Every structure is written in C-alpha cells, then in structure tokens.
View (cartoon, rainbow, N blue to C red):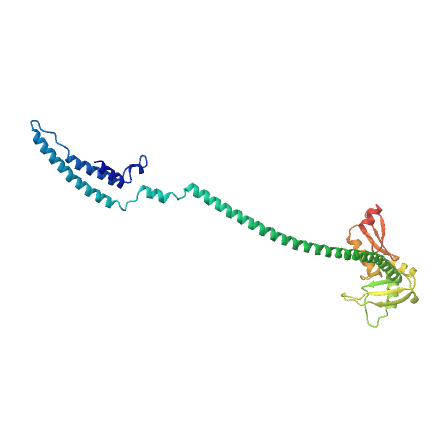
Amino acid sequence: MEFIVSEIDIMSGGSNSLKPGQPRSTNINTVQTLLKAKLGSTKEKAPKKGRTHSQLSNDSNNSIEFDLSGLDHIQKDLEEIKSSLQGVTKITDLNEATKDLVKSTELETLVTVIVNKLLNNFESKLETKFETKLTQVTNNMQEKIDALSLENENLKGQLDATKNVLGNVKTTLNRNVILTKDATIQSNYNEQYSRKNNIKVFNMKKRDKQNLREDFIDLVKKDLNVDLELRDVVAIHRLPSDRPGEKPIIVRLFNSDAKRNVMRAKKNLKNNVRFVDDITKQNHELMKRMRDSNRFDSVWFYNCGIYGRTPDDKQFKFGLYDDIDIKIRQRR
C-alpha cells in the first residue's frame, strides 16, 4: 500500500509541488477514489460468531488472493492514469516557463526608462541642431548688421553733406523769396504808377466812325460839368474783352489834376456809364481778398495804394503780401 501511494505522488508531481491552498488535480482525486473503491471491496469481513479457526484461515487466504487481484487492477489503472497525464502541464513546467516573464510594474518602469532615454537623446540632438542653426543665423545677421551699419555711416555722411547743401539752398531760397517779393512789390508799384492818370470807362456806347476822344470830352462836360481840352486826353482806346456788352475803354489824361477833377464828379454819370481807376491785377486781387475777409466796411484805391476801413472806423493801408488778420490784430 505504501508503494501504491508513492507511485501516485510521483505521477502527480508530489504533494510538495502544490502551493498552500492550491486544490489537487482532479485526476489524483480520481485515483484515490478508485483506491478506496478497490480497497473497500477487499476489507476483511467481521468473522461470524461461532466460526472455526480453519474457516477463518480459509477466508483469510481467499481475501489475500482477492487483494492481489485488486492490486493488479489498480496497477493497470495507474498505468492508464500515467499515460493520460503525459500531456498535462506540470506546475514546475509552468513556473519554469514564467520565471523569466517581466511583471507589469517592472515593464512600466522599463518602458518609462526607455522613453526617457529616447526623449533625452532627442532633446540633446534637437538642442544641438538648434544651437548650430541659431549660431549660423546669428552670424549671418551680424554680418548684415555690420554691412548695414557701414552703409548707414555712409548715408549719414551723405545726409550731413546734403543738409549743408540744403541749408545753403534754403538760405539762398529765402533770400530769393525776399528779393522776389520786393521785386514784385516794386514792379507792381511801377506799373500802378504808370497807370496813375488812367481811367477805365465801362458801358460807353459804340457808334460808327466814332471819335472816342471827342465823345469822352463831351460826356464828361455834359454829365460831370468838367471841362477838358483835347490835350488833356493823352490816349484813349477800347480794350479787348470777352464780356458781353460794350468793351471797356482806357483813357490816359495829361496829369493827375485832370483825373482828380473827373473822378470826384463820377457819381453824376448817367446811362449806366462807370468810371474806375485803372489798377493792376495784383492790386485788384488784394482788394478782392480784403472784401472777402468781411473785416472792412469799405475798400478803395487811392494814389497807387489800397486802403480799407474797419467797422470801428480804423483805416489801414495794405501791401501785396500783408496778412490782413495779423495787421489788424497788431493795430489793435
């Protein structure tokens, strides 16, 4: 019986191969069941009362024979069980196969280490490339900055030279502006002085074979009661004009006294005839500018000068380039 149990332990890997709390194999339970069944059938029956010693001896021999035949059957069953357990994985085989497997925590740690090494390597290479590229860009930029600085210095020198030239030009221009203004003022005065004795006549009717000198003298004598001699009218002629109606007439009198006598009585003219001073274009524009400023009650021309009177009864004489507002403010 001890031999049989040892054989079962050997086939099942031994009781020491199982971990505490681990259930035994189903096949082993089956072998124990068979053993119990076989052995149960060979248990000695209790001797009946009253049997003889020889009868007991015969029964004992029969039991031994039965037990030996039972052992043969058990041996055959063990062979069959052993044969069926040939392909079953043993716990030792499983332990041998899984002893080299890495635990999940160890695997996570290993992966983390590998990833960190890869990241560190990538960062190192990236930083190296970045520093190399940055150095190249910095060097290129420095070269360009140096070139621009040199060019800037050259341009600065040229600018300083240009400023000097412009300064001289500006000084010359200002002087020329002053001279031009003076020349314009003098030219305008000379032109106006040459027209000092002129009268411009508007709306004087034209007729065939007209003698303008005689008609002008007759008009002045008839409407203004001013006597003029033929010698008092130095020149007279009509001006070209695109305006509709009669073209204006320019009359040059002999002296300023004759003109003064005529202009003092011009308010008595009839038939829409008008007498005005013959003023230059610049003086005409000045008078228009004074009227458009709405700063004067009256604007007039007298003896080659332009005059204006403000509402507070202040009289001003203006030149061609005078600022109206500044001049009035300074006077106040």
